[in-house]
Amino acid sequence: MMKRQNAKVFTILALIVLSILVYLAQNKLDPYQIRILNLGAIYVTLGVSLNLIYGFTGQFSLGHAGFMAIGAYVTALLVLPPYYKEMIFILEPLAWPFTVIHAPFLIALLCSGLMAALAAFLIGLPVLRLKGDYLGIATLGFAEIIRVIANNLPHITNGALGIKGIPEFTNLWWTVGVAVVTIYIIKGLVHSSYGRALMAIRENEIAAEVIGINLTYHKVMSFTISAFFAGVAGGLFACLLTTIDPKAFMFIMTYNILIVLVLGGLGSITGTVIAAFLYNFLLEYLRPIEAGFQIGPIVFPAIPGLRMVTFSVVLLVLIIYKQSGLMGGFEFSWQAFFQFVNKLFTKKKPTEGSTS
Amino acid sequence: MLKVENLNVFYGGIHALKGITFEVPQAKITTLIGANGAGKSTTLRAICSLVKTKTGKIIFKEKDITSFSTDQVVKMGVAMIPEGRKIFPNLTVQENLDLGAFTRQDKEGIAKDLNWVYELFPRLKERLWQKGGTLSGGEQQMLAVARGLMSRPKLLMLDEPSLGLAPLLVQEIIEIIQKISQEGITILLVEQNAFAALKISDYAYVLETGRLVLKGSGEELLKEEKVKKAYLGE
Image (cartoon, rainbow over the protein chains, first blue to last red):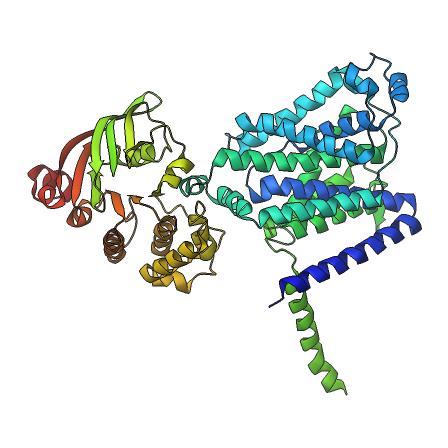
């Protein structure tokens, strides 16, 4: 049995290694590669937060793009200097409080999370009474409403023109840092009695209710926390792309997160982390197939969007053969890790003996 | 212990419970019997607030709990074992039992009750690390009852605990209910298996289309001509 303290030491060591890797990546890699890693880390945050409400609580929510949009706009409006905002809002002048407020990146991110959480709380109360597909449709509707509002509130969002020239604050320190904090908090939550209650709700709502779990409270809390991190991720996203407009937060955004979640395995944080990076790497390295290619005598013409088709096929195969995703319900722990390493060594030893 | 007064429940336009009044005395076994659709399950669901009560009063330990939410009712000391083995299939037996004590904070008491539950259901102890969904039907029912007991209830309500079980297991469940009752826990039982239920009941009520039509001790009802004809098949 691993001691708890040992596990803590290893976690700290792992974090130090991670920081060195981030430092190296930030300084040695080219901007294109850094961009992919940044997106991967943002998807970790998004995936893990969606996992809380869908994977652990079992509430099928398709509203993540909406929460991201809220977060992205809040961050954009807070980090841009007032004189610049005055300049870009050409359709209609910017509404009052935003014309004067200006906040550092960290505060902006927190505000993004809080605003998204507030929105989730308000819509969660009525909407979380729905179950299954109906909840999915309602939350999807919410995300679309947010997008349409963003399109039609030119004095706050600059309408369809979007907000341009957002300072590029987002770097690997921010994205990886936020991802680590998200994992830490959500992992802690899931392993608390609160998390147990969430899983009970996922398993069977009536049974959860009769053992004294307050369904509404737990569902709304889970939804709100999930939206908080989606909002923060939206803020990071805005300061990574430097340009946001309502079109960036269409349903496809939620769909991408959903792919990551299902690919990694519902209810597995480890799986989500792996799948988030895998997805973003593949998305980039599959680009050549869209340019057209040749296998033997067969020539494939250039088809834009073939990458997404590939993913759909991967998803189909996964759902037919391994519904539980890459990691199933498996979760990384130091204990399992060292057991695995031990096994490798005990297996190797006899072969070494036989060769000598 | 529990008093139900003039309880009316509607499902949309359907009048499911038409003003029923009954009492569940402390430390006794009380049974509701009746045909399908008579309102037995609805009564239990109304008591623990899973369905809304239109009019009427539910009084538990001298307190009006009619407007309480389900989790508040559970905290008062009412445990309900819903119909059809509603366990948590992807959680282990141990986790299922732990969740049963969700409303409690006293670690020592929980550990003590865990041992008591193992004594009542030795087979669960052998399967602690197995997932709930991999248990057999009978074992799942045992787990559902065990989980209900983990909240240390004062009143235990069981909705059709023998549903779909082999006759031998029905007997086992009935014996366990008796054992639980001997611990001083008040029991309100809903059963289709009227014969088995009446035999162990101190008090029994017969429900027919939302109305109470008969009441008496278990033995009295066993001898009652009407009950014999309608529910015991004699």
